[in-house]
Length: 362
Image (cartoon, rainbow, N blue to C red; front, side, top):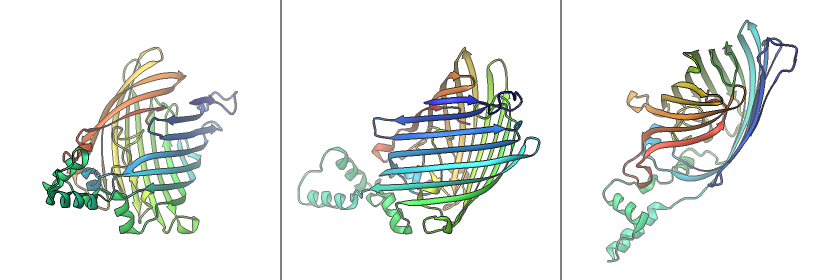
């Protein structure tokens, strides 16, 4: 990880410091993440140029689209190669109120293989009817659950089922242009201790701009609030909404989970056209560069299915902070979510995730 703070004009003490960070994650499961991001703030806080980009190689899983698909817990192995770039520019209209334009590109390529679990279950049943014993291990357990009506092998390959049902392409390219308005009174953009941040953004993904087979739109709303409580303590609140008009490519649905919101959930297990998330986090510096945090949050996905209060998911967790540069932290978080499908051997534990990255979640 590399990170830095700077001012384009060193004689300007009014403008908040600009920032840049470059970091990468490499794991034993062959996951690779390379990411950069930054904010150039200049002209006495009146103008801002922001950018970010990422390359991801992700040997993960796909659960389907909609709350019920995520809750059922059937997952198909899906190795995804993703690339993304975002850029935006905004200028102060009045005081800390900004308007701006944005653009971005996304590419996701997917490799997958059918499990043929229906055929394998039928083969085991034929062997059992011929007098052979039920096999041991995972297949034997799944066969028993199938016979009890607690496992459906036809749902074992949700990505294959989704591609077959929708005609979507495993490899998809998307590009967008957008407009946004924001109000920002934070003392610093990357680790605020006071102020508020409100941003509303509309993005358009027209087919003529290179989008794979379709045109759709997207609207996002972010509201963040920061307040100092006592010495070394900051209360941070976050509300985020994401809504899509039209039918996006499979990788462009609003996804719950990840490194910033609803920490503790596998990112993309719950995905749909609409998403709302909120979280409250208490941040406490305890000694010199060391600090701790605790949070609680909740969220919903819907759109292809109806909104129901009973589908609300919770998130809670704690974390450690190390301030390796002034106001810029390394964070280690551990988050928990709801329990999975108790009928599936791989999904009986409570959802959880360990996160290690730079800067605060919001």
